[in-house]
Image (cartoon, rainbow, N blue to C red):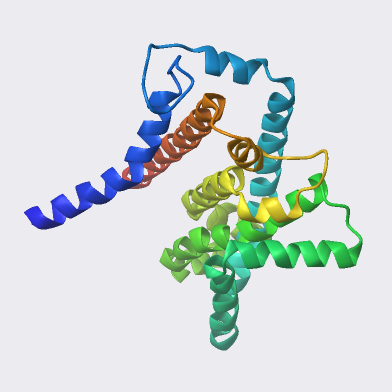
Length: 259
């Protein structure tokens, strides 16, 4: 038991120590990541004074919200379709969905680049949005499908016996029951879209960029603690999404327990 806890602590240390190291030096007035001179917020002021960067942040938020919302709608419908499909088709569709989850981002990004080039779609906002919707849908399906599988068929049978049509069954029985899965899928898709680099790098065009691509471009130009500050803000925003999702799931479980 102690060995497993030590191993878990070591894993978390390896994962989080570089992030805390980056955050720590984002407050360094020295301009390097080798020696901490004194505390300063100048790098954060530089980030917020950069108009181009603020526009990129706006682009990233818009892409994340739009793609996660549309992917949630499509993913919920897809999960319901898989749930009601025949056993043979269900396994096939679920396998195809899982293949997209485990496929390398580089292959997905290159595939989208070839597709958009053949289709004549100009690389930019539209190509990034379509790509983010596509790789977010399987995530939503995986979040929603377990909730559908937990749902007792007697709930639907009871609703039909009481005179509910298919639309009422969907909107008043199925969707309320799988709401925690829908929120989980939405926030997972939002986080993936906000943080994605590999796919976005392939399908973004001149004049349009997202935070992940911008951070990579700035890091290649040399060490600047403004990159640390920007990365810190991105990490805190992602952490905020996780906390919001946790609070919402806790409230949903409490309400479910009361019922």
